[in-house]
Length: 225
Image 1 (cartoon, one colour):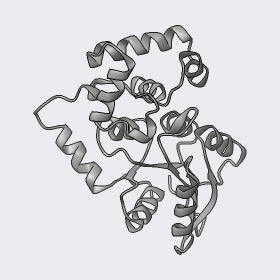
Image 2 (image 1 turned 30 degrees about the horizontal axis):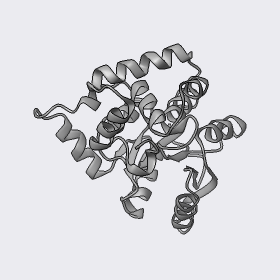
Image 3 (image 1 turned 30 degrees about the vertical axis):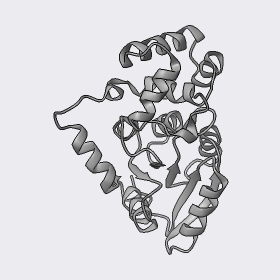
Image 4 (image 1 turned 60 degrees about the horizontal axis):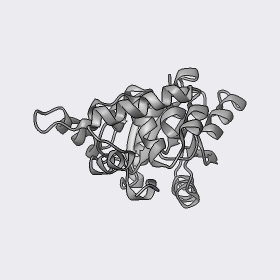
């Protein structure tokens, strides 16, 4: 439900890049009716903030690729516990399974970092009113992915499988992933094996190059070459 008892929309920015956080804060700080109440650098920090400041935020701008649990898990956990908070994903990924998975997993908006500030403001206002907002380029990709044609193997992955794939790409080891996601190392190894099978690859490096090819990762998020 929208928060009608506040004159300003209270926005939290979550991104692990200082320049992005400060840039978004500066751009939104000049907008009437929008109040950037804090900026954070991880999904864990966002969850802690929501727990410590319940009812104090209306909209979260959430990055996907961050150290630790990242934006996928943070979005899932926050939307489950505090469904009134409108989460807008702001990421470099405009294709692959992520838009659909994140929107199904609790996000109410999806923007890319290439979208303009006007579109971001529209998204914040729409999501605050209880609507969904998907950037035009994302909406086009979602529509095209529904058309018959060459199948994208990444589309067959579950949200958890995509999440494990992204964490492997960021160089996280099995034990580290298991601790972050609160799953056993054996379960993570099973996910890795399933990823290799579903993507028809024989190594993590092959898997990561396929993920890059299909738009789930970019070179900045891929320490393994």
